[in-house]
Amino acid sequence: MLPNKNIEKAVEGILKSRARSLVYIYLLKNNGSLTQDIIRGTKLHPSTVRELLSKMFNERQIYRKKLKKGLIGKNPYLYYPISPIELLKKHAKEIEDGLNKIVNLSLSKNKNNKLKIVKINIKE
Image 1 (cartoon, rainbow, N blue to C red):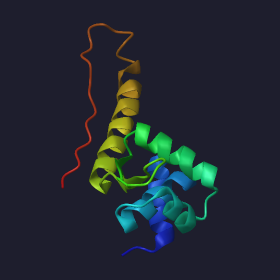
Image 2 (cartoon, one colour):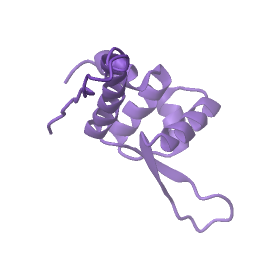
Image 3 (cartoon, rainbow, N blue to C red):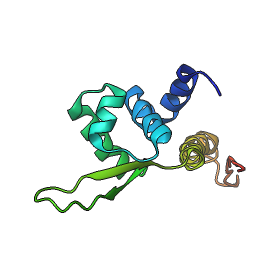
Image 4 (cartoon, helix red, strand yellow):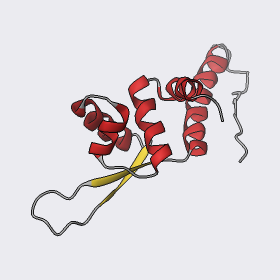
């Protein structure tokens, strides 16, 4: 297995944030964690973790399941990462979109040219 710093840098490049990469890697290693566990495990500020969890959930980089507790008050969520393959597929799609814009810039001036499409394949 690669050293943690190499993994962090690779994930940071995909998620474009060191804090997001710490949260994602923590969830990947622990396969389901509460917010408090993530805060302790990543050593990030509590408000940073809560904000990241919300954003990453909305961007479908993580998912969550509500825990049922018999107590009065809020039921906490258990957070899980999407699979690394799914994360790579999402990243590949972003790269494809950018490359296709660049490739087709010159084509938009000449209507006789056919649209070109760049496609990245990730095999499992």
